[in-house]
Amino acid sequence: MKKLWIILLSFSLVVLGGCSLEPPEWAKPAKKDNLENIKIGLSISTLNNPFFVSLKDGVVKEAKKHNMETIVIDAQNDSAKQVNDVEDLLQKGVDVLLINPTDSSAISTAVQSANTLGIPVITLDRSADKGDVVTLVASDNVKGGQIAGDFIVDQLGEGAKVAELEGVPGASATRERGKGFHLTADKKLDVVAKQTAGFDRTKGLTVMENLLQGHPDIQAVFAHNDEMALGAIEAIASSGKDVLVIGFDGNEDAIKSVKSGQLTATVAQQPELIGELAVQAAGDTLKGKKVEKNIPAPLKMVTK
Image (cartoon, rainbow, N blue to C red; front, side, top):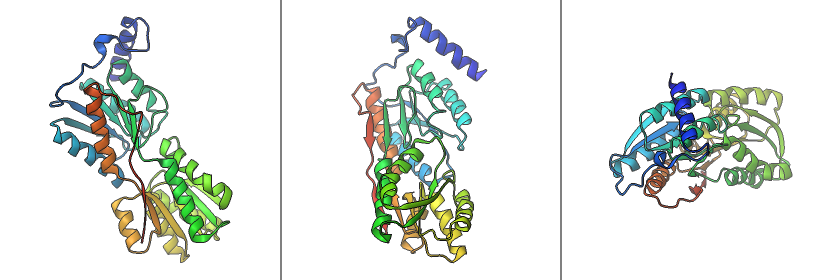
């Protein structure tokens, strides 16, 4: 029934709007002079990852500063559930949607539903392939991947044998971090294996165990996030090998691991800042102010 309600309402809005892809004027949100009592709908890809917990905290804290309400829903890394979650948020009458997509393609239908209803959409950390998004608030994932590749070259020299642990297939962060890494790796490193571990620590452990068996001469690993990197170092420790591991995110566990000398390095994002910037962009949008299509959050390499 929920999906049917969204489809019927979306269809009626398009018809009443003269068959235009733009929502009719009455469906567009009125400009807000005051942000009090604004309702933010936040859809997070997973709260089983410290990075996204920090991102959520940044949203909630910044919203509270402006007396805005935040409704948080955890998609649990299920793209179909996330689409349903966004439909639920639309029914609850949110004024603006903040979405951290599980899958950049799959979330497009939900973004388009929000567009038809005139609800502004802001994406965090990962983009949506289709639909009208006010802005993407994220680190420069391509640059971060290249930083990781350059770091391995600096530490081991050209031609080093490297494995790559990829994130969730379909996520923009997976594509972009991989793209940046290969800008350096394809020219200066020997990538002997790459395999997805779904941004998950347990999968990172299992995949790394298998990669070490098939490629015992691996000298370094680039993982698309810290959770996979932390799983990988467990597998490496059990094997007794000496392998450099570089993660991505800069979450609390990863920073501790770097300081203790286990994880070699992490390309650190600032997830709370991403959340804060997204809320600020939402406020500006609702006030009718112009917002840049991409809002970057700075990166930094963390080593011992």
